Amino acid sequence: MNIRVLGCHGSGQLVPGGNGPIQCGTCGFLVNDRVLIDAGTIGSRLYLEEQRRIRVVLLTHLHFDHIRELPTLADNLVGDIDEPVVIAAIPEVLNGLHRHIFNGAVYPDFFRLPDPARPVFVTHQLQPGREDLLGGLGVTPILVNHVVPTVGFLLREGAQTLLYSGDTYRTDALWTAAKDLTGLKAAFVEASFPNDMDELARVAKHLTPALLAEEFAKLARPELPVYAYHLKPRFRERIRQELGQLGMYHLTALEEGQTLVL
Ligand SMILES: [Zn+2]
Ligand SMILES: [Zn+2]
Image (cartoon, rainbow, N blue to C red; front, side):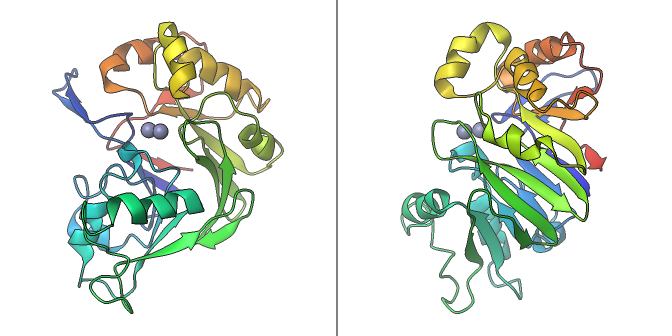
């Protein structure tokens, strides 16, 4: 499984870095060039030719930072692709896209354009706990604990599985579902706020580095590589420092532009 990190932060922002500015983008991870996990960052990082290869977009939830480049993907591809792109999510997310985004007011309805018989996007309804085959991957959504209906994903290619937490606070179902998977290769786990903002994390239903460690311990797989993501750019340095202080040698924070091969 090849994973390109297009965007891995909890907001969009330019932050100073050692080798020049770092452009933090909202979540978008391109798997095997054709399946996108979350749609926060797409066209701002990909050539048109690369956008044309996207066949499936998996959405964890409706929050804007996870869907914000979906409208411009449609605009880039309209009239330019042979097969529609499959937008896969739970019903609450698909309904929200129709009602709030592709409603003819905020943006044209690319689920019906340019022609209802050959639209840019088609929907695929995911059901929590059920594995569907999409874009060559087994995709199992698991409900997690966020302020709106949200899933994490277990993404399987052959015998290898990646866990993607989605935006979540403390949760059990995801860890329970992943616990006994023999082919589990890595976990992407969100860490949005620094430790001293744990009250905000509780209310907004996100994790801090300390909570990430507690949640990850539920897997009882201390050797598994863990990649933290969804860091709020404002607190990026503090969160990274606190992640480093956890003493989890196999834990790293993701960065835009990185490619992982599992
Ligand atoms: Zn988010
Ligand atoms: Zn969210």
